[in-house]
Image 1: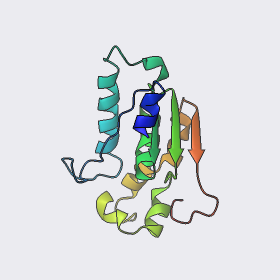
Image 2: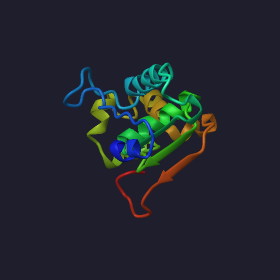
Image 3: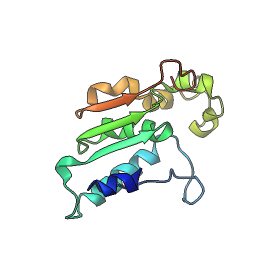
Image 4: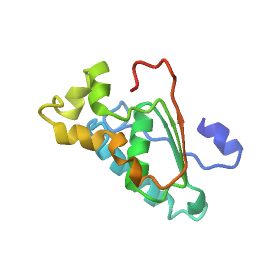
Length: 142
């Protein structure tokens, strides 16, 4: 996808989530990864080849979750394209219980953390236009 964007004159950057093969750190499912996005975006904004007035973000699944949290936290994105985005961690963990271990426990023991990771609670912070792509019959991403 980045190569396709580059052929059309866009700069594209792909990140490997922390803790995945090829990266350092540990998976945090929406904390450090969002900080990483912010740090990378700030670094890109210092590059004279980047038009900061046209900087967008996109992601799929967990990447879309992190991108959505990033547009809630950072105002320098001008647009967001998000595909199969989990927005409520309580519901998401009900379908994907293995994620609770990455988050650090159950919703009952970490309710504040689940709230902070649930982008649905912070949509009023989003200033940029966004495209959400989601399957009507998708039972995995909720």
